[in-house]
Amino acid sequence: MRPLLFRALVVGAVVVVGGAGFAGGWLLKPAASSSPETLSVIAAGSLAPILPAFATAYAATVPGVQAPVSAQLYEGSSTAASSLAGGHQPYDLFVAADFRTIPSDLETPAPTVASWEVVFASDPIVLAYAKSDSTLGGISTTNWWTDIVKPGVILGVPNASADPLGANAIFALELQDAAASLSGALYGHFFDGSEGALAEPTSSTLYVSENVAGTALSSGEVDVYLIYKSYAVADHLKYLNLTAGVDLGGTSASNVSAYASATTTVLSGTGTKLDKGAPVLFSLTVPSTASSVALGLSFAAYLLSNATASTWASYGFAPLVPQWSDAPARVPAILSGSPSTGVTGLPSYLGALL
Image (cartoon, rainbow, N blue to C red; front, side, top):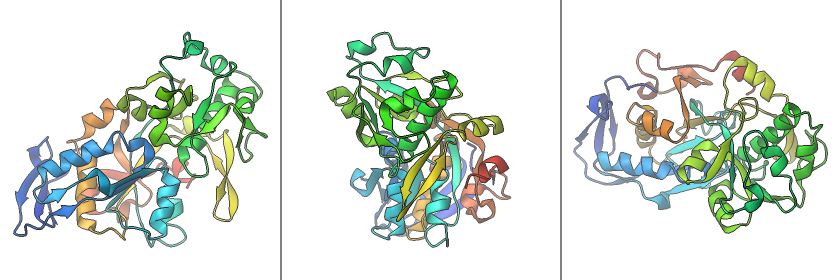
């Protein structure tokens, strides 16, 4: 992530200027109006313990803007996209946990809700586990796949048809199956049917929304949960890292090729579709239906600037430099810089997955 070039953007009651100012990227000056604006955000459920603090910090530096949690909704990225596409309620910013969600669900077949996205960070999958579970006392990076299949251990995952994290958890199980030459036994312990088919949970698996994963682990409802590292860090969960070939955190062409060997079928509209494993890449857009497009762009610029880069990294995200877009020519100048050097097109091997 980089400092934004010197640029002014009028946002309701304020003028936001990116330059050599606050946190290395922001100067703020009151504008003539004093009517407060409310920042509304819809985002991936895993961002529930993270994004509200960003919104609060942003509002604290911008006169005339408020960012109450009541105006923020955190749920599965696919469900959130469906809400936006259905026009149920306008939001100023959408942050997805899968870089494919915005292009496939909001730009296709016609860009009526969104016409661009900025992909800004990767976030690997980790295995979070209950601190008090004696069954998992010796769990480690080298044996986790044998420990989590012990009798009585319950895996928590979101429904893959509603949340990309559910599919990513399946991909991690399948990739570990292949890495340890388990012939599908790990996946088969937690899901009925063959790999690549519509996954049906066994008695060892419980559907739990990602935004309450920490509560489910602490209460003993589930014992383990495959989740984004950022959520585990933000919610102070006990977790262990997975290997690079399993955690979906790599962004190279070889990583993408390996991850794509894992597949699952999810419900889509009135039918189904086959999803392939891919790097976990977070992206954002400002919906055309936003209550205030200018406010959404201003907050997006803040999230992508050097004012927040170190905080993203502290949660376990790997910020992308430069950032990527499926449609760099359509990215607003406040986000891309002028000329457009800060945001480039997706690498072709990732663009092929859209």
